[in-house]
Length: 430
Image 1 (tube, rainbow, N blue to C red):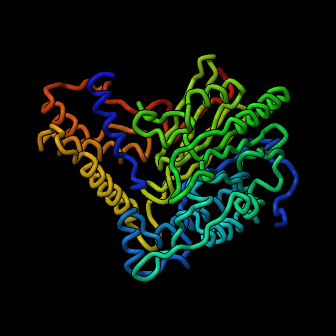
Image 2: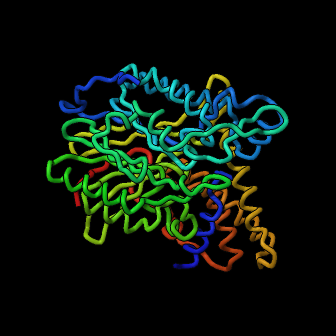
Image 3: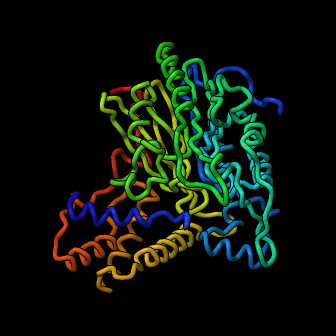
């Protein structure tokens, strides 16, 4: 790795601001006469209003997370209203449906989805690391937060039965993974990558695909290939790196042994997987040693800037991706700028804390430039399509001068191809 590769890798140590029924849809297959319209959103982190009341507890929670709970409710309302106008045939929600696994948040979130479902959109969900078996689910009311009831894996499948589980073509016995039929030529493979069976005091960010689950998925992909069926994937954790050296600096946002997992799934015929977890808008292409390709389409969170969701069209092997951003809500016309400022503040605070290492030989001016570079890189990465930024270029130049080196423009690129926000992907081809 060259010097600038090492410098940019430092950024990725800090960018995580996770500081982070009756079936209501018909049995008639969709998409057989035209393109399949797909919407996807993720990491909603929905906290039911009954669990959040003005007071010291909620204030402390919002200060720590940078989230304004009432604003997030309005953001979700606006997105669901837009999807109601768009009428996608399917909506994929790739985990972290709730703030931290509260039973009441799950039930309230399901009710918010019903109007869209009744209008004809089939909705499919998969859990995230904040959804199931959470030991420390809490309400934020009064002066202090208080514990509330969560849900078990079995309850998750039951609560969300009409959102994928009840009519699954196949269920994995080892996890909450399942296979759904979209139409006669398209299947949806939903992989549960969470480690909720290991939770003790709190949730675990890291993810993995169990050996039994992988074997189950590969058998499905083999069957699909024999039948000429296109398979779409969805999972909470990333399957593919979304920036250089992510597996070194942010392994918790990829499944364990990601290269092996991505290669096995790509070789078996999976050409695209929709993910979340990292709260960033990014699309990456991985090619297995055998020459088979898979795209990881990661969508940013609806719980922080830039409040992204995607509207896509699948026609044969061509997937057209368009990204939309919520920039304002009725309660705050300045949502975009204010939420961006909050994320900037959180990133700067985190970078200062993590760089405050006793004995670290970095002069104060160099430290200031490094922190500014980290902040600007993060703000660009979460929105996708990282481009030149005057403040970033200034901090890079200053940092380079202090380090006694110059950076060539091409060495500053850290956005792995293809484009992130508006792109046409050809899936299922080597």
